[in-house]
Image (cartoon, rainbow, N blue to C red; front, side):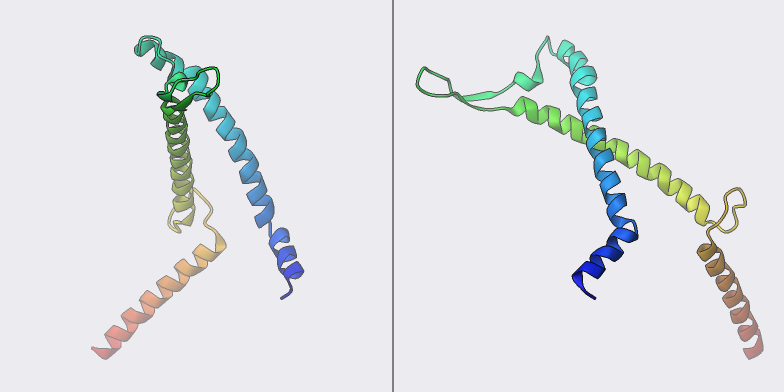
Length: 142
């Protein structure tokens, strides 16, 4: 298969579109979480720590002079980014957990409240037939 044909199949199947939508939504979600952390989470945390602003926290290696720039390790920003990360990771965990719950419910052939996908229904029927066949064969041998 040629490279162009393979790319065409990839794009037509929706993988590329799904990926693009995921990236755009992920970027927007990241901006929302960053704003929540900076504007909602960090101010009360700053009050609890006597007005300390974490983003300004740094470990000075060399102070600035007229001829030399300051050299510092900005650990406060790292703490804020880690808080962002944990909030995003926890939110994604919750979303995946909810999706898996719905997916598991839809794949249960005995649950009549949600329509079971056709392939799962067929596999369930095949499983029942195989169990019946095994039972018949065991009874025949005895």
